Length: 135
Image (cartoon, rainbow, N blue to C red; front, side):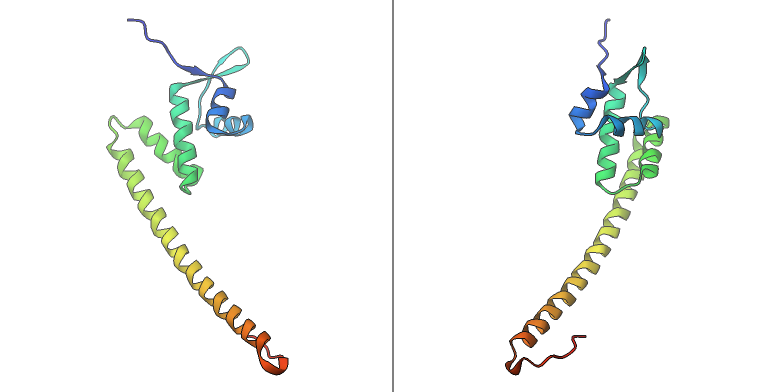
């Protein structure tokens, strides 16, 4: 049986995922991608393409590269996907909780800003234009 192996150049993956060549080399230096070499040319496999997709997804979700690396290592070492999925589900839950706390804090600050805006406008529109400290 003759299987064709998908290979990608650094430019192929950079274009596909809208990242720079420098970003690709950084992930390689960090041990997250492991391209083969043909002479001085980097050649990426389907595995690297999938890993890059997962790295970028993890970054978009707010995970650190250390957390992404840990999940990728689980994927590489586990005979099945269960440990990786459990780790990913726990990390997602923790990230969601963090974002919900941040949203609550932002909503609180926005409420204070609205109140100060109303107070400031009221003072600006008041008769006589007397100035008072806003606090």
